[in-house]
Amino acid sequence: MSSNILFSFLGNEDITEKLAIKLNASVGQVLFRKFPDGESYVRILSDIKDKNVVLICTLHQPNDKFISLYFFSKTAKSLGVKTVCLVAPYLSYMRQDKIFHPGEGVTSKYFGELVSEFFDGIVTIDPHLHRVRSLSSVYSIPNMVLHAAQEISKWIELNVSDPVLIGPDEESKNWVSLVAKNANAPFIILNKTRYGDRKVKIELPDLEMYNDKTPVLVDDIISTARTMIEVVENLKDTKMKAAIVIGIHAIFAGNAYQKLIDSGVGSIVTCNTIPHPTNEINISDELGKGIQQLLQKLN
Ligand code: R5P
Image (cartoon, rainbow, N blue to C red):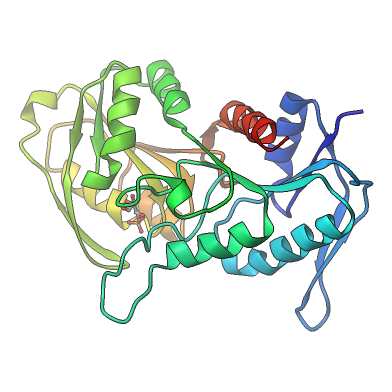
């Protein structure tokens, strides 16, 4: 019997099933629920003694989940596991990676320190690493950082004729340039100024030479969607076709998804790091490889 066992946090069942097949591992039984007063309850029902336990929990809206992750890990350790790791296809709190205003803290680091205290390893897809280059500067536990770029390039090659890739800001350059290279497409990177959580300004350069191409916007996170909406609206002043928007992590805070649809976008596509109706790009192959490598490192 395999010594690796996967567990799904609520809402992560689909990707957990895909990973279990790839890793030839079983999916364990666990009960996550709330007491009537709102306190969290965790009960692990499968036998996990001496096993490598992997909890799959993507971390959008992380505050609600955090205490359950802690209880799960501590409970698993009390039951004699070999290792207990977290797979967070989307890793939260990575964007506050510097002090932007006096009185703030570098909360990406604080969150990383907390998680590193009770998990033995972590696997994630394209965490927001911009000013901080390596996840190891934020997490002190063994980690695997995987990338969606290859799968995104494949999707573009299969579905878009004559694309030009557009990165909305300097921070997107890393993945946009890689996606463009793999998809044999040209790319441009725009300049974005952020004035607040929901206010950004992006100006387009002269795009006349791309008039006959399909603009494909690529970014890591779509949260309020203001970044994407600003580019889509500016593109309407050009002669280019309606834009295709690709996000790795489909957070879509509040009514952001509807607002992006209403902006006149051609189509919206995301990776399945966060469950959403736009999940057309499956990154479970990458994730599976990463989990395997992490478990090899730990054992
Ligand atoms: C920021 O640098 C990120 O790469 C994304 O551009 C940003 O998080 C998108 O946020 P929103 O959808 O709220 O504009």
